[in-house]
Length: 52
Image (cartoon, rainbow, N blue to C red; front, side, top):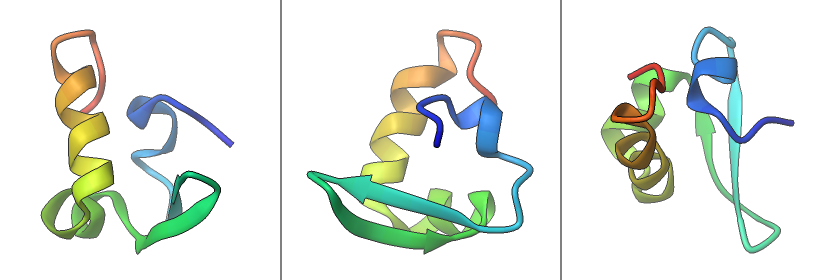
């Protein structure tokens, strides 16, 4: 389990949770393109040294 995109960006499979429910499953590239929750987290971390 991780809260930083940079920690999971290279994983084969990422599961995104929102309010303890699965919001999305996929690779970093897939989720960045299609999952609003993942996109929001990614956007908030880009300026903080996160891995886009």
